[in-house]
Image (cartoon, rainbow, N blue to C red; front, side, top):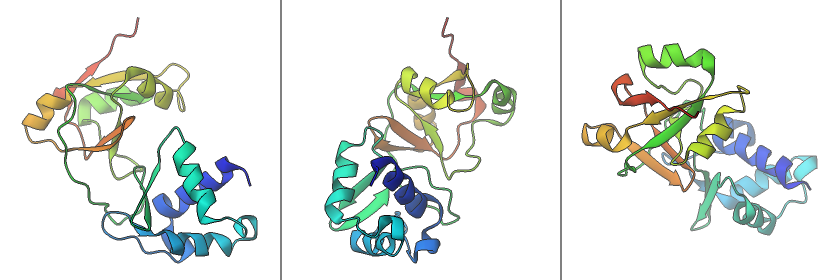
Length: 182
């Protein structure tokens, strides 16, 4: 079983279509690990997946998409389901970064940085990570610098996911700058 294939299936189940697996997430996105495992095992491609394989996948993953606690599992970020996943606000670092396409820049500076197909805007504490994210959709992405601490003080909520990902409901334009990467 390829780890990437399993990771994508778990992402799909926990971030995008839990109902297709007979799963019901709580308001923070948690579901019993045993329920996820049983749902995966009903699929012939994942019929031999074990709890240990899932835990190893989570442990070795560099993207840290999932977390397990007290026999439950959840996707940390990236949800597109209609049920809003509740998060606890955290004080962000002074700056966060967002990689985007050149085509999106005008709209962002007009309307702010808003989640489009996800529940939250994804941000990074590092320029390099934001660049890699932006590069998924544009060979030469634009990096936006978010004055996160200033926005937080003004009442914008930020949520810590892991050392590579922060999320927010939206970022008004007055806290966004173009980062000059030259």
